[in-house]
Length: 592
Ligand code: GTP
Ligand code: SPV
Ligand code: MN
Image 1 (cartoon, rainbow, N blue to C red):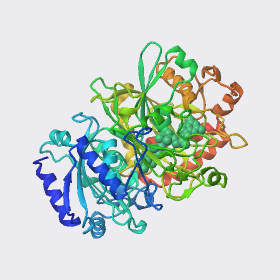
Image 2 (image 1 turned 30 degrees about the vertical axis):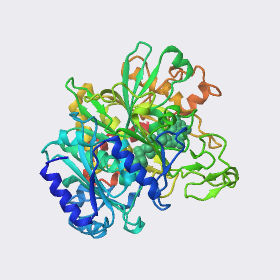
Image 3 (image 1 turned 30 degrees about the horizontal axis):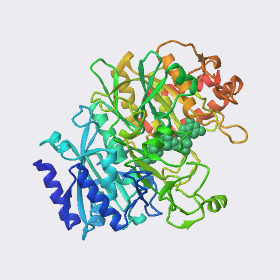
Image 4 (image 1 turned 180 degrees about the vertical axis):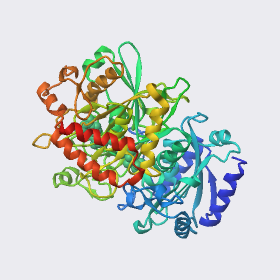
């Protein structure tokens, strides 16, 4: 498929290491993928689902100890420890290679090495980049074929270039003690061993498109961010684009695919999805910031997805999708997960494979699907996919939005005072942890720009890069906002209805970008006047409730600032002075 000497030499080296029985190049053809699906069904690696109800759909279950990203086993292997920074786990590269090679050695014996050439971004786009993943898992091949653009066309575009990312995945025996997800940013290399779970093994996604790419982006003057990209079309037919960074399982897929509330639909508002997880952004010829979605599929959280909360996501999973760690309905060989509908299948198989009575099992407090069970679905299935999805130049970004899960303190929405103040707001993002990563759930932690698990270098330098991007973009820079859909009342219920109604907040954000609406200046930034958020058609919600979630409590924010003071200590003299000044400003204003 290629004469690229750097690729051929690396594959020879890896073959000598892992010792496969044979090597198969993934050419991107449907025939080859169909052969592989058959083989995976025969070996039991995948289950073919009901082809009338879910054409082209398959089911897969990972080992019960291998169902989420593992942040404490994810390493940044830069030559200097300081370059990995205080928020990453680090290992010296030569030591890391040795450790990984010792685990990988001979691990493909009796198995096939699949070579997956893939493009992150539209093939040949000036914003796209290329990788090659080696894997011994057909599940990985089939997922990568949905999540990225794979095959011959990618090699054709790469030619002889050495600008591509090496990725070795060895499934091994899925031993959690020997599980390592290692990025070598200075070598454009990723090695992942002893896992078969999505974020750990679909190497184009978090490992390349965020950890390696964030490092490349710093060096090359662009941005790789954990952000959705959506377009809001107004009744005049104008489309404005918004990028939003929320931590894992905090609502990116839902916001990216939202259905406008009825009143908005009647007026002609539409929302278009460009991406639901990752944005690569670069200054365009007109000086504005342009974004592409480097992915070609959605790797979305299944539980909570239903015809009411996110019909576009659900429809996207109805053909050619792979379901991982959800439950099965054995009567009709379909899938089920919590809140898909109100009727757990009676004849059910829970995510670990045990046959159970669904309603009884759920009534006893168990979950049929794993909370981080996922669907892998082609973007092409998405009813609201943007016509600009394949645009190699990307879309111009009007607003950048940060957010997280905060039961109190953080208002529904506010605008930053400036670009640097916006970078500050991104840097102090706090959010309750979720099931997307192994470990405790529901604990508030700082997750700057939703990149804590994904920044491939020193986060102090990353903050500095953000500030420099602002200088580069000048007055053409997107405006920066923060949102919080997750404020709760005394009973722990979410106050804001969320989902499609989040468009009411986006509308205010876009009006602010065009200087069409006034705002209230507070200690933290600009908050809407309650009457400027359109509540028309909202049931059980009024201006009083709205005012309660727009409120900025200076005492709480003084505490928040003290927490940030503590958090910032980590960065030592890597903390940009601009952010230090922003924090001082916040402290002064909360006292005033
Ligand atoms: P990753 O794929 O892990 O990066 O997650 P994500 O950010 O795409 O999160 P996703 O959209 O899958 O949402 C995760 C969970 O948040 C789901 O259980 C949703 O039901 C819930 N959620 C999303 N949007 C809202 C919202 O506006 N309000 C409330 N209350 N919950 C929401
Ligand atoms: C996330 O955890 O942010 C995800 C899922 O999008 S994974 O690909 O596993 O990282
Ligand atoms: Mn994500």
